[in-house]
View 1 (cartoon, rainbow, N blue to C red):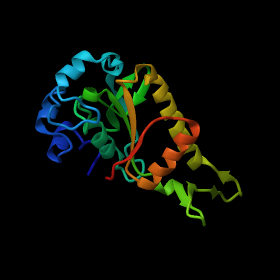
View 2: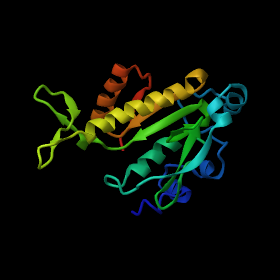
View 3: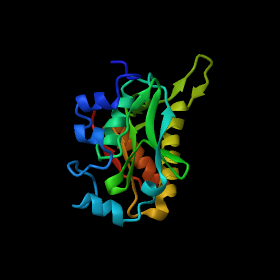
Length: 209
């Protein structure tokens, strides 16, 4: 599948990531389960003080879709859309819709529950297991004997990213919340521990793909 072109709203509907109603209307999310959702979606959206909804908006982000095995855009859209509207989609080659609030980017936003989400697909190849069974960033040495630490830096960036996201919505919690999703459980466990050590209170959820 050409992920640069195929993950449109129509394609997402066809494979069941979106339902027909969600693809036609961002506001009708009553049939979709949402973490923290109240029984009356309209009342929830009208009455609570969800600043990410009031002052945030979708934007088109330029991303390299060919990174890894090329499936990360599909996973990101699965997470971004599984909590109801607004609808996120591919809008062109290397162009995907995301959410921006107060100058900070998120992979998606679930309006009904005022939940901002981040999705991380893969990254198991960035980790290796030691003799005691623990996991940590792979250590790679090039032909000149230089240690390459881009794998550990990648996970450091995750922590910094989550910390910035949390601080952006902290003054509006609740109702606002932030959840990180991971396709790989080992990666989720490692990043969750890193968040705990840095004091970043962002829940980390394993959502297989």
